[in-house]
Amino acid sequence: ILNSKLIKSDEFLKNLRVSINIQNEFAFSMKFAVGWFIYSFYINAVAIIWYNKSFGLLMVFIVAFTFHHGFHVNYIVDLTFFLLIIHMRARFKGINKFLSDSFNLRSNNLFQNTEAYHKWAISRETNFENDFTTTFRSIKRIHLELKIMCNEIMRIYGFSISLMILTMFFLVIVQLYNIYTIIVKAGDQLTDKSLQIFSMSSWVLIALLKFFCVNYACANAINEWNKTGEIIHKLEFDSKDSKFQREIQKFSIQILQNPLKFTPCGLLDLDYYLIRD
Image (tube, rainbow, N blue to C red; front, top):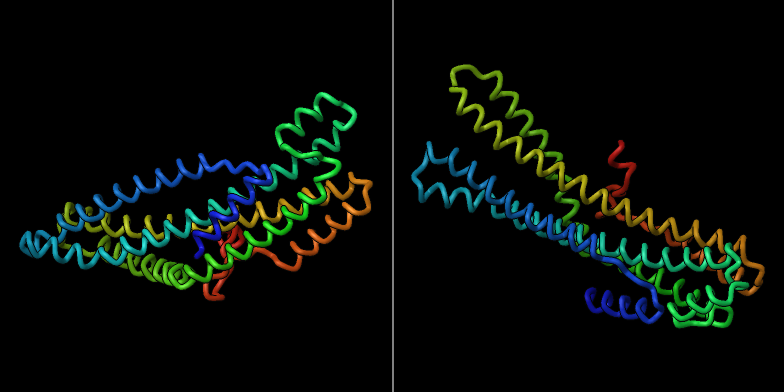
């Protein structure tokens, strides 16, 4: 259902001539996929070398698969949520670019420049003076629908993200304690200590990386959402059309009454403030 809604929203934005550039997001997702394969190979290789000293080779593979399988599945779930959010950010960014283009058109007095106006109108396939208010209403509606879809994404993945955050805190604390005990423990060989520290440090690094990436994606999406409000305020100041100003005011009220937040299970807000704190 969510995918069908996203497809419909993309078709709607396309009909409005709102361009959505997802090339950077696609490249980012490919990097994450490659990173996941490298991480899986590395963490399993270290575990096999570590367990091989205590178990047989067959038992090593069974233990490594059983112990790591849940973490790898959770990684894919977190990655899916991350990719959905950065693609929602791309949609908000496309809307902001469309609104910025219209603001630049007004502020630069391009209505008086017939050639420039003609080029702009052809690129958008619309008559700015006659149709932009109607287009603006459509932008306002799809902007709210995208926000509702963000809430739906958070509802679907909220429990998994909450578990990821709780697991991250627990894992980091436990592994840091284990690293400390390994360092201060006497009698073990240096190679054994190094292998254990590398393995535990990898889990800490991956847990922190997932946490910061998810927060970063949510914070950027919220930033693009709030940026829409800044752009339409500029449009309101520049416009002399009372009808258009009322539409802008309705859009502003809509943004204020429906703030975009990512709060998994009501535990905490995922944004820049959480990272800084």
